[in-house]
Amino acid sequence: MTSRTLVILAASGSMALLMGAWAFQYIGGLAPCQMCYWQRWPHMAAVAFGAAAVAFGTSRLWMALGALAALATALIGVYHAGVEQKWWAGPQSCSGGGLSGLSGADLLSLDGPGIVMCDQIAWQMLGISMAGWNALASFGLAGLWVWAMLKHTKSLTSH
Image 1 (tube, one colour):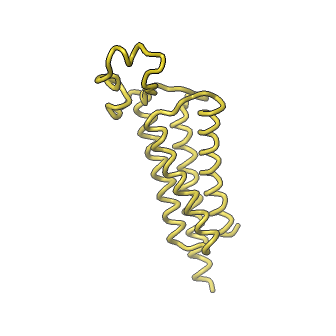
Image 2 (cartoon, rainbow, N blue to C red):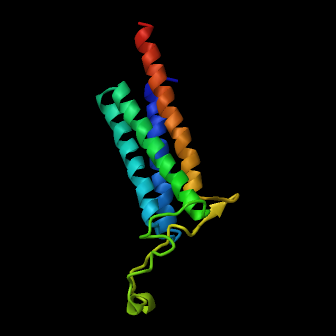
Image 3 (tube, rainbow, N blue to C red):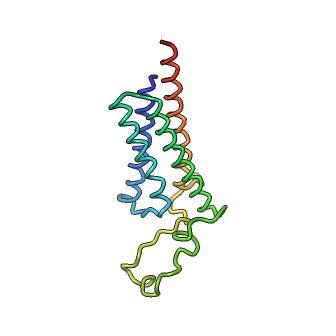
């Protein structure tokens, strides 16, 4: 497998995870919390880095940036899963005390702020939340990016 193919697979993996998140949101009706959005940004960056690598030629820079983006979303996913499991505190804006500062009218309104709490598991499979699955998949994608970088480096030194 060439480094270009591995880059395409890694970037496509991030795109698939984004599409899955959007499907859960827009088809499944599961509104994302603040930390869910945090996990999407690095996937978008990884897709962009993969597109740049394909368009401008694979380089260690694009692959390193893609690996860092995948690693970033994986680590955010670990943090988010830990918040959901109550292993550590999450951001005050969306966990535990996230409702402080809202008026009674906001809380009783049907048109209220629509806050989704980061410390509540909205969906899980095999005892692992969406954030946990994102972390696991993203660690794998980071590995693909690193594999692509190693293959690219090896091909440069073998010429």
